[in-house]
Amino acid sequence: MPEIIVQSFNHVAIWVKDVRKSADWYVECLGLQEASVSEHRIFLKLADGGVLALFETADADKIGTGVHHLAFNLTTQQEVSALETLRQQNIPLRQRGPNLSFQDPDGYWIHFS
Image 1 (cartoon, one colour):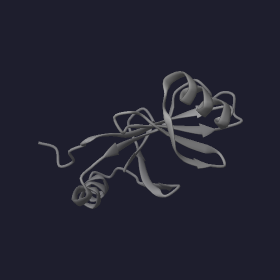
Image 2: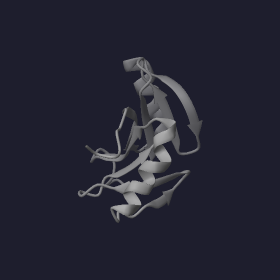
Image 3: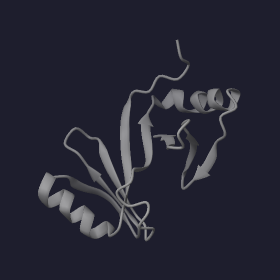
């Protein structure tokens, strides 16, 4: 049995060209609600509590090509031990914003929330 037990998705983050325009579209067309706004990112809340995070970039090659990162929920008690388990498995951790993040075998960034 794995030592890390992911509870659920916290959020999925995608690259967008214009964070305000994209946020407005998700609010108006899909009924999401703004949960957090900063200069280059907006977090939108889904009805079940999940979150879609929009990250603005000027790099046209990133837009529409995949996710910025995945965030998984863990129990509060498990997050510290989960990061230690990753270290023991020699999975490199990198500070990205406020989170310690790591990559899956295909290079997708992941962090725990």
